[in-house]
Figure 1 (cartoon, rainbow, N blue to C red):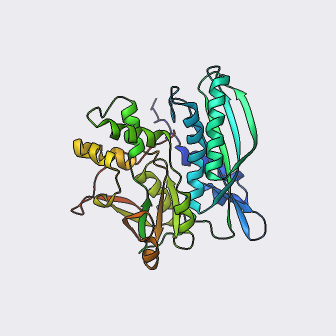
Figure 2 (tube, rainbow, N blue to C red):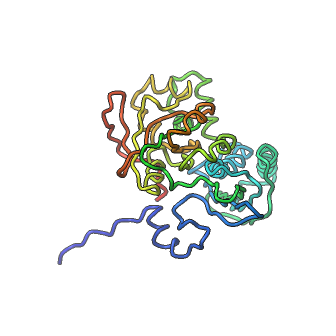
Figure 3 (cartoon, helix red, strand yellow):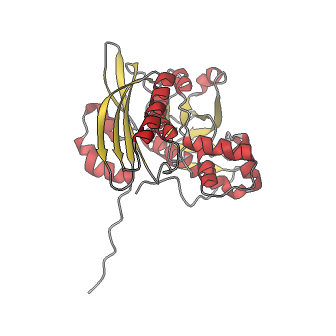
Length: 324
């Protein structure tokens, strides 16, 4: 009897397309973006985003509860920033193990309170349940933007310039530090990288400034290469990224100088939560006044090509973080 190969396992986006996209309503954008849009008060739309973080995958059990809370909010706020939206409300779901007692919750809620004040949003409700395995936390953040002004993944066009805000690779390198690697770095550099892993910095000010200039945008959560691939797919275009242009922090530069083999980690490691966007040439003067870096260009075609200083394509064994 002949053997048949097992069917290919669906990845995250295959699962969404097969099982959940048929259920989506008009504001869901076909589940092809990372947010939903629904009508708000006159002249505005609400931008809705949900993200979850899981103990042992997105944070360590020994991480400070205050920082876990802030990471939960900030990974969601990063998506609002990429759309040019202003945070307004959020809903919170906690599935907590017995290890999360009252002292843990006091510090966790203090972290939420601090970031509510910092970013201008308030809690509306949610749910709390007990978990026997890993602590799992989810937030749904709701922002507001002028009608028709949200910057979506679709919209990039050949000839657009490719930019990103902030720096690339810090969080992925910070995870390596927490796992016991990169011991040769200076303590200040290790501390910077760990801080970037534990506490993303949502670029809300940058996002506001991109409205009217960017043609397409999203945040970098699963790695530059993977997320740029999603933007290209949504826009039906190709992208070229030039590695000499990549914005690196002093700490990441030090790590890369000591080990050039870290480049794939920087490009694909994820957890950056920076804004990746495309913009047409006429927007260049306005964008030159903003804390963003030109990293490549949009072309006709499909897929993402990473090139070195000589213009030669780099071969990567993976595009970025995958959930399944």
